[in-house]
Image 1 (cartoon, protein in one colour):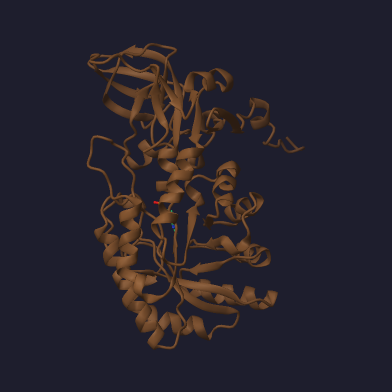
Image 2 (cartoon, helix red, strand yellow):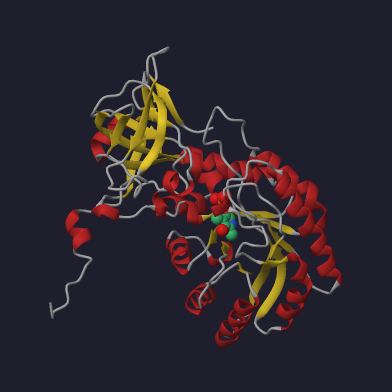
Length: 421
Ligand SMILES: *Cc1c(COP(=O)(O)O)cnc(C)c1O
């Protein structure tokens, strides 16, 4: 459920007509709904009622300062995967004790940044990383709470590029070696081993892989306790999928996900952390774009938009589906016709959809990509010297640009021509 609905024949974001924002900001742009972000965060937070818990928003899905501040002010924690994300979380006012540092290749500099600024815990992913974190902590004279990310070798049944919980993936340590690795971690100075971490992938549309993974984590927790470790926190990762295609069967709801957590690990008396990204931000955002040309090809018709793969890379990168709707509501029963929906970038990969049934649209009309709030703006680039597109946040009847479109000069002036040229 989201807050992008037709009203009086026009797509609205909460109470604001989308064309009004397009007129003020220009196209293309990302548009986020505060009410949707809040609602999704609360579904998880309330779903875990009864267990001590912290919902840590996976910032890599959408790291705009306004989005982070909105969620941080509700009490959300943040899951960060780089020094840059750590800095962003702090800049948006999130205290260190609510920031979890994940990621498979944290550098010394990133560790130092987090340890100096304060961090809730660091999720360790390998023995070499463990040794380095210990050195950094000792050099700063601090003790850092850590978990070890275990790889449970379960098949998340998702796109291969976003599956992370199989033994062939680069993430975590094999669960079969966990007891050995925990013993090593406990022996290192500067580390306080407090919990277990798992994250098996993204866009999961079935609870079964989560159930399998969480049961393994539960059993491991009991073993580790028997080995003498004071395991008191479980970080269960993110990954719950969203319905990109509304006609398809719906993925499980956050409440069902939370009930599964209670059922599988609720008896252990641990504090629970989860790290949802996509489910909080995905359906809270759309990408609004304008049709530049309607081109009739041989046997194929094309809608050429002013947005491209550099603005939204998911279709090219993951072959993912985004619903594309006309901002002016089509008349009931209107005839749909198939179009290839494409951007202007000089690559055939710059295709959002092939033979997509679309209502009649003309050059100059607005269209919107639904479910574009996660892994959209954050993955965008300036390929073809197309400026990063603005991000806009709506709340009720107000909207604000939360990242402006850079000018060509701003882009060009980042380059430096050496004196000797
Ligand atoms: C990407 C990631 C998440 C968030 O995944 P979603 O599918 O967006 O919920 C959570 N935790 C870690 C460690 C991640 O890498």
